[in-house]
Image 1 (cartoon, rainbow, N blue to C red):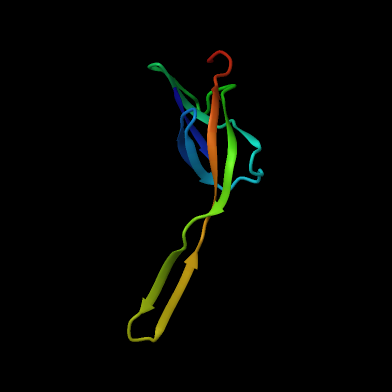
Image 2 (cartoon, rainbow, N blue to C red):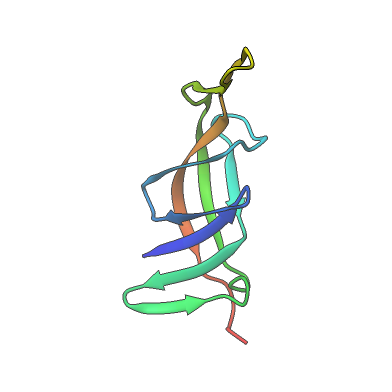
Length: 108
């Protein structure tokens, strides 16, 4: 069983007892999160697609880690103009452990 979940403007494949790294969430480490933007659920070959979401479905996950990714360095150079810009960026992320996928009520 697995589900496609949307959070932070991105879509992730979520299966029970697996880890997913998503855009930063405001919860603390150890708290449980309910992701209710479930776009699709696959359970033993039975596919449920939402329009746009599956009604009543949610994915329960536990926050395992709050960190920043490795630094990404980008360099801008304009030849013959003495322009050079070097910058770096570290994106925040949250690692979730998927606990359970709950399927909601009847489909419309």
